[in-house]
Length: 260
Image (cartoon, rainbow, N blue to C red; front, side):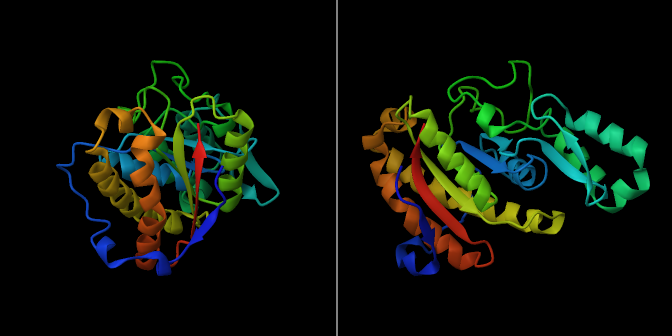
């Protein structure tokens, strides 16, 4: 695992001034994974944004349990990953106190989530290279990630980034496939999640543009995750993030190259 590098605008170069331009006609798409603590707010807003832009995307949480705000700070609503659907959470909280959970945005969030995928999944339970939660799951952004691998993991909080990096180290790189792990620090509220989602889509467009350019030399090798075929893209990522950071100075980013 490479050493983590904080990224700032000083890394930007003039040739990257066109970063962030989205093109719906682009055939090639990087595969993304978004991660937050409970796979409910920040990762799901980003999941939806990326899926709407036709990127293959999956999402996870890194916490031990799914925790949502309850009637007080000391009384959160707690659920199990991989076993509880967003729809069942919505119906339970709507029955408990519809006024409270509408006012704090939880019902709106869960309604969005249940229209994206079935329920929250835990990163540590994901078997890389294997289908997730059975083959009957239909979700937005699911086309293209059926094989269980992604090119870029974007976390939304540094402790989630730490959890992902540590977990990949512990797995021992069985596929020997490079993956970029980027943390975009987003405060865990609905307003900041919206801003963060826009920033992450802009970053995805920038990365995808560079990947499409570097892929032309060896499409098959690039798509199979060959380190040699991806080296040109891998080397450009820090500068791409640096240019992006200038456009999004309120979303601090950290990056490293890991391995599946």
